[in-house]
Amino acid sequence: ILATLPDLYRVVAVADPNPQRLQEARAQFGCATYKTIDRLLKDLVVELVVVAAPSHLHARYTIKALKVGKVVVCEKLMVRILREVDRMIQTAQETGQILTVFQNRRYSPDFLKVREVIASGVLGEILLVRMAWHGFGRRWDWQTLQRFGGGSLNNTGPHAIDQALQLLGPAQPKIICDLRRALTLGDADDHVKIVLQAPGAPLIDIEITAACAYPQEPWLIMGTRGSLTGNATQLRWKYFIPSELPPRQLDPTPTPDRSYNRDEIPFHEESWTMAEGQGWGWDSYYRDLYATLRQGAPVPVTAESARRVMWVIEQCHKQCPL
Image 1: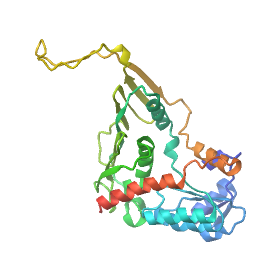
Image 2: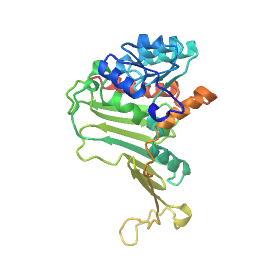
Image 3: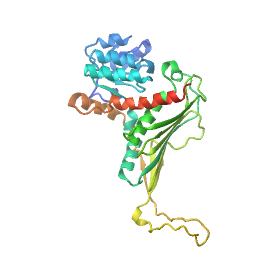
Image 4: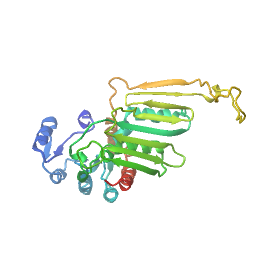
């Protein structure tokens, strides 16, 4: 993403213990390369550090970078232990540096459209948001191991949970979670079910699984006037306009023909398709961050909002220790 924004960013240094990765960095960016983050942090040209190391290293590297005066973008997951998240945030506050988290799915075109349709009110009061991140297959890499902070909840969960919390609103939810090992060769979860419930908010139902051979549509939203369904590139929704329905009154007497009440609902249907060449929009995060760093705009994803995601994840792990 940074390579696509040469008018805003320049990659000046890369740290990686893998010599081949360093060679790739030099070839692509013509940048300085270092075998350790400690050497990179001594480079005075570096203003912004993107911490994209394995998850269990995020807190350590983020805190080091903040303490030497760097702005930090931490990849998700911030870090599994909430007290480590708090150490990261506290360090940012003490140093006066910006700490933000790459929650790129807030910028996904389908999510932005879902928010737009909900905000328009055409679906009425939102009762249920179901998010299905389905697939079927095995994994056997480092992200399947608990000691590296692996598992589907930690790897994919921050994306879905972050979107869910944006739709839930500010209330603190009650959480029901079920974590299981299904097909993974590691010891972490690859089948996740989370339900979030809060007063005055829709019920949020999240499924992240590697064990669904019949994947369902990622989006299903139910409201009192209609519903929405679809995927990352296509959405459709239908709804009725209350004034177009005939008036009804409650009638507890037997129906004339011994049947059940049934409305002929005049639904209105709409759809959205991602435009050809539109892209996933994740570069907008870095465009917004540039506006923060150079023009004083608000931080696009605050560390505190990412902490809320981590709070949900920690509660899930407490309910379902593997």
